[in-house]
Image (cartoon, rainbow, N blue to C red; front, side, top):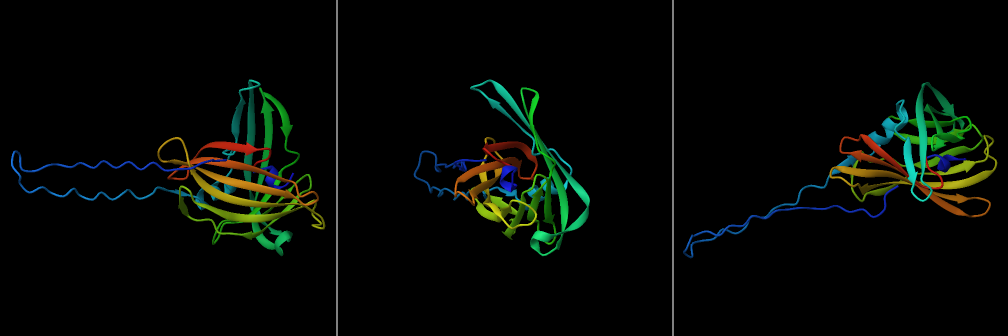
Length: 241
């Protein structure tokens, strides 16, 4: 599986509450009445984007782990995902041997406490953090070699409703990069969560198989707050980070 097979928010909206207090002057008479003051709506809340994703990729963590309950079959699923950064840099041949940082990603899936799938080997993530956080590619131990080009700069902070493209990827069948397996477009977006001061920071994967043209989509969403903490993870679709 390639990049799309690792790494969700629907309608978004913001609720704006303003209380206008008006008073009448003059008691019983017709004294001068003050015009009600204009109340400016509060500034829209913003949420960290670049720092939240950079922290996720560059620190040892299990923040991508998530649970899912299938109510129809009364089954509990656990996606145990772990990211471990390396202590060295390497040259990434997929982009002209540029010097990049490395992190490793592994995932195991359990159903009702019994492991039913474990990532064969691990996925190696290649990225830089300066001057911007750019995710340049990924190699999966089972073969798929993904090159991200172009990679767009993430905003430092963004408001609810913001959507943009992070990168497009060509996923090759192996390290020779002679055969394209699929092409992937990855967007980020911010959608309202269920409590004030929180939002879903989502990565939306749109995948097109090279041989058949078949398409599939998936999303991984991080529930976050204004400080960029990851409070919850939600996955949608057949494949996700």
